Image (tube, rainbow, N blue to C red; front, side, top):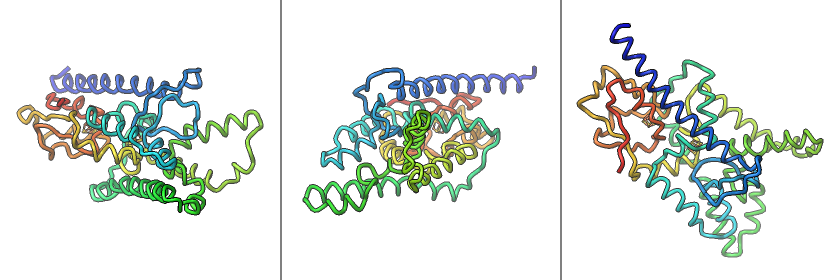
Length: 305
Ligand code: SF4
Ligand code: SF4
């Protein structure tokens, strides 16, 4: 074997090792999140990753859902906010890369195709902001409803919002559809208990449509939901800048423009080579470490603090 072929094989082995460890952790977290089906009681843990509202027996609480529910019940959402701030301060957005069940599903879908679509930089940069818009609209609805209910003038507003009142984002969230609504429909159909009114509901079909779009997109564009639409990801992205965790690129080892392998493998399309080498905590970085594993000169490493 030539020296170049040997190096390529070694790099491939390193990427495979990192990805295998990450997949095992993602899988174990996926099982833990859904372990109620094996009889595990709910745990007193709230994490800032997308899961679902509709599974009453879920084991781990999802911070953004609880934040909306607390506002709806006129409580200050200090617990979910603390979960976001603490997780982001210590680990940045790495829960997205290593823990989130919906992120895991997208990472699996990526294997369906060998080559993925290249989103132009312009489209990518403008689409990234969509998730901030979804976050802002959700917080606006939940916040204004909370204030109007506290002032005793919110009843008609609550009625007008209908199913969107308790948790506006979850009413259409693809994660809720995948992990709560569809399993419930399958189970109820199995026992012949599914309500016809549910199957005829336009909201259900809107949910399925949104889920289908994002699952399909994830096959062609890695982590497209996380990049462009997830409000959890948006809130973590805002806080990620202040994270103790970051990445460092050794400028002596890095051959930069002659290589660009880190940029090529990044699922979040981060322009690593344009970021400060001492430490970078890009808002979009999910700390999957693909860049570090792909670097042939070992120039990229996690940095804490
Ligand atoms: S951005 Fe992706 S990984 Fe992070 S919480 Fe949202 S769905 Fe999960
Ligand atoms: S910069 Fe590296 S660690 Fe961050 S998302 Fe991209 S590949 Fe993953």
